[in-house]
Length: 185
Image (cartoon, rainbow, N blue to C red):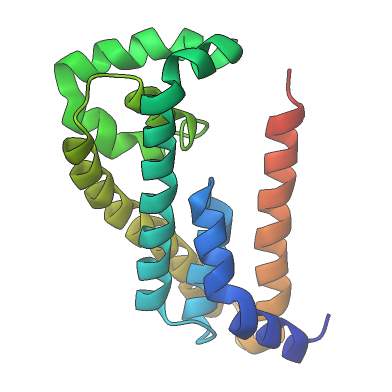
């Protein structure tokens, strides 16, 4: 893939990819978008705003699904059911901390809000804390991609020659990690 093709794809689909990616797990696509923002291919503020929108919407939907069908979903997924009592116990003591931090815990990005929805946490409290957590998460993760671009730029004299390879490498590494996590017993 040529540099011009990568730039064209990022320009055409970058923000949409960030939105769709952050509805789900999102870290890899958001790091790549932060890197693309450093390269001037995307606007960092827009990346963060789109990521916040996707993350809030995804978590709200998972929370509402947990509120609506939490008990039956937990019964269908034993791994979630095993985590639920621990999450509920933590919520009793530190609900704000749990809600703010669940998106930073790998593997709980979708399951966490679903389990939280099956608890007694009020919808409005979750919505407000979820939005605050999404802003912090989007800024930190997109910032990590931007910082990666800065670090790479300081190491390489002519980053423009390598930017599309670095962007593809980030995406490939994230995809391989995702596959590895899914295939683990």
